[in-house]
Length: 208
Figure 1 (cartoon, helix red, strand yellow):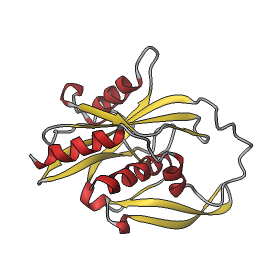
Figure 2 (figure 1 turned 90 degrees about the horizontal axis):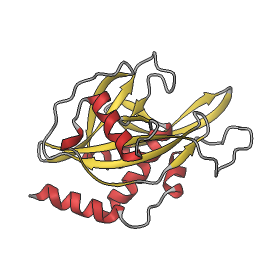
Figure 3 (figure 1 turned 30 degrees about the vertical axis):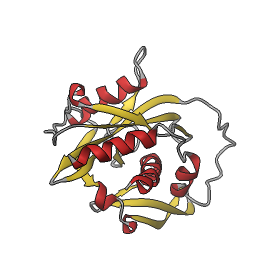
């Protein structure tokens, strides 16, 4: 089937060197806010997220979640399913557990094929570990997590269009900034999630 070729090519690409920082920088807010000087080698609180690919209408899609306004971090923002790694848990294990808690997809159906570059997020103190996995058929989703407001998805085809990548002017902490973002189904995806997706998009460009 055509889909397994895409998955095969993607797994193969994930086993090689990744663009990492050069991809993340595309989605950096500019000018950089005058943060206290940050130690970039600092290890944050590990958090894992999952880009979960699934087939629908002969196209590959992946899930995003919109966070509620009652969460501690990133209120109302668009995220990938995921969360903080628990004590004694592997990074992959956390991504799978959180995906189950947040969108209701059972880990036994998910085939992990690799990961993207991890990075530290000064604002929240997290270190992000993004994983990529796929399921054979479109899963039924359900929300068991009070942090998640709703679940939606984007097709890879739509995600790859240049027009999904935009920039807006805004103010952060009183400073005028340019915020790069992805426009996904009318939702604004920026910050850490957009940095992960920027790297995903760059490697997809190489294999599609």
